[in-house]
Amino acid sequence: MILGKVLGTVVITISHPHYKNRRVLVVQPLCMPGDTPSEDFIALDNTQAGIGDTVLVNREGNGARQVLNNPEACVISVIVGIVDSVYIEE
Amino acid sequence: MLFGRVCGTAVCTIKYPGTEGLKLLVVQPLNKKLEPIGSVQVAADVVDAGIGDLCVMVRSREAALAMPDVKFVPIDLALVGIVDELAVSSEDEFDLFIHPGWNRFS
Image 1: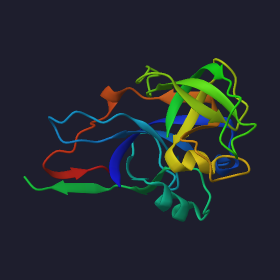
Image 2: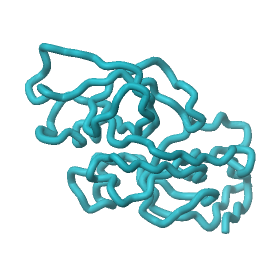
Image 3: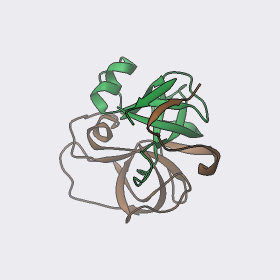
C-alpha cells in the first residue's frame, strides 16, 4: 500500500460494469523530500475521499478484488483509507 | 490504472483463441496533466471508444478480467472507461512530501 494525495476527480459515464456508480480519483504518490515523485495514477474510491485528502491506496489486483467483494473485478488501485497522520523517525 | 488517448486502430487477423472479436486500439498513455508517457501501446477495448477519446485503462491481469467472455486471455492493457470530465488540481496547491517527524493531514 502507498500514501498518496488525491489531486483530481474523473467522470466516466461509459465504463466497464465494475466501475459503475463508483468514484474514480487521480492520486499522486507522496515521497520523502529529495526523492523523485512517482508518476500519478487513477484509483477507485472506497472511502469517500476528496481532492486534497491524503489516502492509503492498495495497488494490487487481488487486494482490490477482496475490497470490492468481486472475484473478477478488473481494478488494480483502490483507496482503502484516509490518512490522519504519519510519523517518520527524524 | 492510467489515462490514455486513442490514436488509432490495430487490425489483427490471426489471434490467440479467446481474443477473436476483440477490438484493438492504439493508445498513447498520459499522465494527470495529459502529457504523453512513453510510446504508444495497443489496448483491448470493451467500452466502444473511438479515435480521439480520452480513456481510463487498466493493466496486467486485471486487463484480461475486463474482457466480456473469456477471462483467461493474453491481454495486458484494456480500456475500461471513457472520460467525460476531468478536474485535476495543481500540484503546487498541496504538499506532496512526507517530512521527518509528525505529518498531520486532518
